[in-house]
Amino acid sequence: MHKYASNCFSNKEPIGIFDSGIGGLIIAKEIKIHMPNETLIYYGDTKNMPYGNKSRDFIIENSMKMVAFFYEKKCKAIVIACNSITSNALEIIKDKFKRKILIFDVINPVIKNNIFLSFKKIGIIATPATIYSNFYEEKIRSYYNHLNIFSLSIPSLALLIEKGTDMKIIKFFLKNYLNRIQSIDAILLACTHYLFLKKEIEHFYHGKVYLIDIPRIVVQEIKNKLEEKGLLCIHPSWNNYNIFYTSSSISNFFEKKVRSLFRNNIFIKRTLI
Ligand code: DGL
Image (cartoon, rainbow, N blue to C red):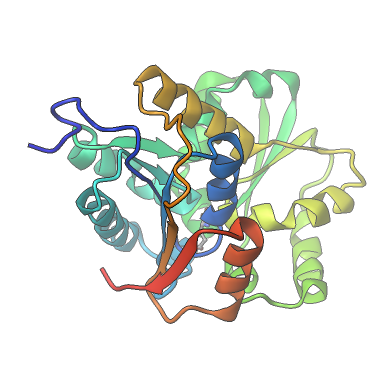
């Protein structure tokens, strides 16, 4: 029987975090800031990136492989650090794994946060797979019926970010889309890749639109849950390495991002699952 089923996971076991590429690194970094003793295993399915223009079946099939990988690695918890996966595959992942491993995602903690009570009009920008799933909008509407929601899918933006495209080109591309979402109080960057564009988006709205801090809200939820279950790693383990896997050959940009965000005690490897 797996350890979770018998309730005897050790708090020293790693947390598995996954995305199609670099997007989830921002969530992983936030975990390290607030839970520095945790050991992380990261998987970026770079070979199949972008997930945002894939079918629901494709997303389900490939994200299940990543969850199974973390389960084999005896992770005490997994974090689905991808909105496209959360909105298309969360329920299926939960059906199969919820008794075996603790599952966190990047959407539910945000929806349940009272932050929405402070706004009247919000914008949601995300990949086509997230927007067309309707997951976000339906959930938000079921909790907050006072809100006006403007959803916009931005095809290819995540891919441009993943490839390390020149920021001038990204800004030009982004501007054409953000021009369509005006007069909002707050915006949700509902694709973890877009979190790398926080400054540019703030700048576009001249600091007048509130950027909902998804990483902070999500990581607070993870920390509370781990603490509640006695699974928060409280002692530093200096010899533990955080491992970052990719499914295609490691791009310079991926490596650069991992090194600039995590610096020490890291391994970057290619592995197919
Ligand atoms: N980072 C992912 C998300 O949060 C998806 C990017 C992609 O592969 O299209 O939706």
